[in-house]
Amino acid sequence: MTAPTLLIRDLRLSFKGYSGLVEVLHGISLHIDKGERVALVGESGSGKSVTARIILGLLQTMRTARISGTVNFEGRDLEAMSRAERHRLRGTKMSMIFQDPTSSLNPVYRISEQFHEVLKRMVPGIGRAEADRKAAAMLADVSITEPERVLASYPFQLSGGMNQRVMIAMALANEPSLLIADEPGTALDVTVQAQTLKLMRELVTRHNTAVLFISHNLGVVREFADRIYVIYKGRIVEHGKATQLFDNPRHPYTRALMNAIPRITGEGIPKIQDNSDEYLAPLVVHEGCGEPGEVA
Ligand SMILES: Nc1ncnc2c1ncn2[C@@H]1O[C@H](COP(=O)(O)OP(=O)(O)OP(=O)(O)O)[C@@H](O)[C@H]1O
Image (tube, rainbow, N blue to C red; front, side, top):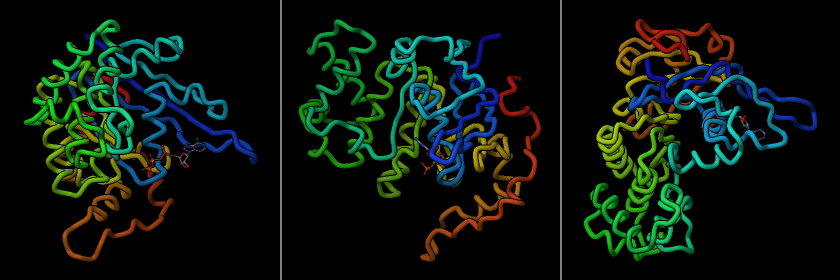
């Protein structure tokens, strides 16, 4: 049996502050199989980004962070890797797309220079001409019709939607086995966001890339994810296939999130009432999915 692309077991995180330790993750478990699209959905502050930063090996070096539990990437324990090894994984076998493409790209470098930096991580000696050829092919892959013009541009010369396509092309340039997408496109208007997600779905399917898709909006992940983990205050509260979760949301917090999916009514986004007693109800696992982190 091949190891899952990502396997997290009992991940706990606290931050050391003036008034002692503040617990942020209370034993998160999840797994993502090769080529699978998995969403982690919860409100702001629930622990989605810190989970992503631990997977990327970015929190391990923070002095105030206390981390326990295991994170295995393609069968290897991240903890057993050196800092240099974890650094090498980022941008090669693991990559990330952020919410706001314009601020994630470096404003003072042309797109071609930024591509060159990314491609050098996989092929250290790659020259500019070869990198430009590869980058142009990647840009064509994300339906950019004038790759040469885009390569010669600075991010501020491109639209938000175009920058997002560039980010996706860059994130997939080294054929990573895991892509972490943190609310991609939230900073864009809804039509561009929908187009971006459709494009991303097509690409990861074609490249068989596993995805951890992070969002606060269940509506956005509906079309994208195969499986969903719902997270509330650092705990997974429901785990199921996307269809199961949408057809039959069983945890009170998932139902509250469902009711908060923005609708075009002109009334804005409904607020989730803070109802911790109810929302801390036991974990719900849908049929055939296993406990979070349990590989079938
Ligand atoms: N460096 C840090 N020091 C102390 N607390 C932190 C730090 N980073 C995050 N936290 C806390 O950890 C909790 C989880 O934060 P996290 O950023 O993962 O939330 P999130 O679910 O990604 O929310 P958002 O959707 O707003 O990004 C929050 O309470 C946050 O304040």
